[in-house]
Length: 183
Image (tube, rainbow, N blue to C red; front, side, top):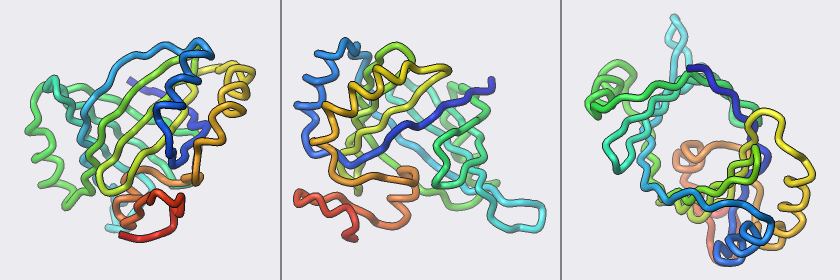
């Protein structure tokens, strides 16, 4: 199945409790908390050069393994990908034997929705706490602007790349809000 998402924002966040209150006040609905492990592989072209493509195998605690095959540069906000669902986590081992060493991202993801907006409150090992907003289809920008006006004070540093880019670079968000420090 082909899917397209538009990332509207991704920031380090220093106060999830305040953000939850704001989301609820704006009418967003809490969906779930999921423990996820993303195993991310870099794709190569036929000559062995790195491309902007990646394959992400996401294992969830319910035994599902979701595989995303996408072409993405770290600063793009619109991402299109093919999406597959497996019940056999051995797919990760197979991908590793084909594509080499992955980057591993372990996180707890809290999901909220408001119309066509999806809010992620992520606690990512080795990185910290992140707030991300994705839009599906034609998201209402009035909703988006109202959210950002209220949530902005709790955001400490804008993130241009993906979680795997941050793990690869060793970036960690510290309590003082300096997102550029290295672990």
